[in-house]
Image: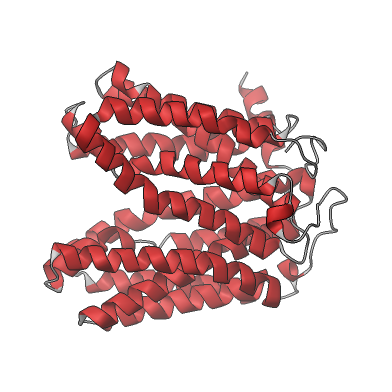
Length: 403
């Protein structure tokens, strides 16, 4: 049994190019310093004396920067290449963080946060396009998963270290976070000295080259569905912790470990799961992911206690693991080599719109109708949205007639 499990893991990680591992290592370095955004509201109110409303305005600036960065990152990727775009984003984010740590007035702080959000968000279309260049269509989903594992591992380290730094001196957050951004940018010069990711993988025979994107028979439905799935998923940052505290009677020290269930599952099982479903049509995998995501949240009103809460997290985590790398692969395969960055930026915008709308809409419904209405509502929405990913189309290596 143990040998079989080890073999499964080896098979899941086998076949990924060396440059895919190098690119993910760079992303891990960059994400391991991510800490400022988690403590920014506390810093603004406690250290700089901003009001709660002013801190909210600054955070809104970060959101607008993310949306702008998603679009600009895709444009830059297609014009100057993924590797150069990633380096510029990492250096730009690092410098914006240094400037933010030195800023005091509202206007300057707002500008620095907006620029940081722009560079941080512009990075991800470039990362996705870079991985698409490196990996052949057959292993591309696993390449995206490798990026995701690196991002999750790094994002797990950053807030923990940031908590200790914030307790000592808030200003250290900006210097450490900014320095990891610069180190990640410098890592490109070390790991890709021979060209590496600059060389594109051979174009896929199944890649669909259509312009403009809205005339593509698959992409508009996929992006529209992704907005709604993101809206559902982003209940985690608004309604979910409130519900866990008020209805499940869990304190903060027990709510945090619920999120850890998600992280641990992704690290342990994401690659194996993605490898295991490679034989299935991409559209069906994405639809199944949407279904599991809705089911996990929809189960919340029917139980209580930490263990049951962890079970619901495990269910929607399966949905997350199925959906995110799959929809990224679908979008990648709809693009040509010339517009890979722009297509990935459209996906980033779709996720970003869900982030902007989801928390405020969910908390509003929660206040007026209660938590049960929220969770049954998002479960029904997920069930209604899942068929969007089953629209007919071409461009998927596992199913040329099914998106």
